View (cartoon, rainbow, N blue to C red):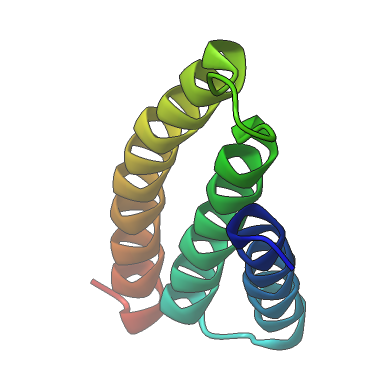
Length: 93
């Protein structure tokens, strides 16, 4: 089993764990963290798929992975603001 295959399997496992946690929890902050874990697993899968047998890695998949990281940071910031606002409204303030 090559290194790329190990990363591919681990990326799939991390994605699956994040998705399961996202669907099974009711805590909003835990859902944001689970969304981040799912995104991290997806990026790991993309990087593993970009690795080829011995040649140069595919730059398109690396660009997609980098774009995914930037989008994840933006979505996380927005989600944390929304969670904070919803928690304030639930507390009556």
